[in-house]
Length: 115
Image (cartoon, rainbow, N blue to C red; front, side, top):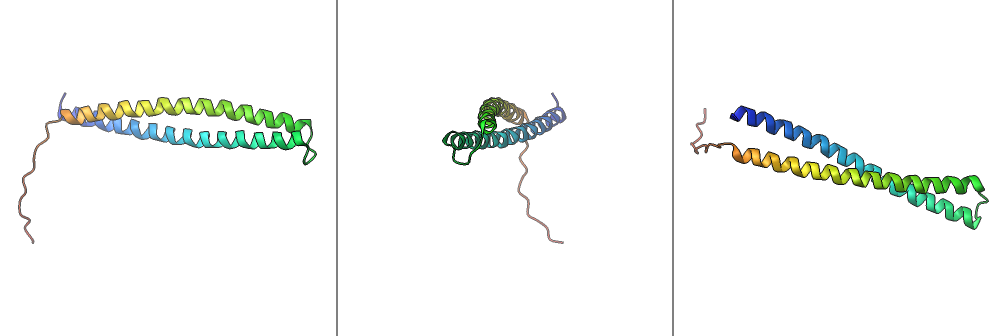
């Protein structure tokens, strides 16, 4: 491979890493929203069971649906986040290997000339 090919491949890998980082960030936001949904649904279910505000059966069913939906979303996004982080690690390792294979040249220190 020529140095230009390596540079292009490194650039493509860096673009992929950025895209994967955006996916990971989005998963973290969904994980937080899922935890909030689980907590909110559990609180609403508790309030409904205790009969504090006179909510009916619809609120109880809605709170159960909120908890279950939050659990499903949480599990899915945690799995996706783990896979994305693994892919980022593999891409970073590949990028490091490519950078290590480039024949780097040392630039000598030269005094600066003031104009």
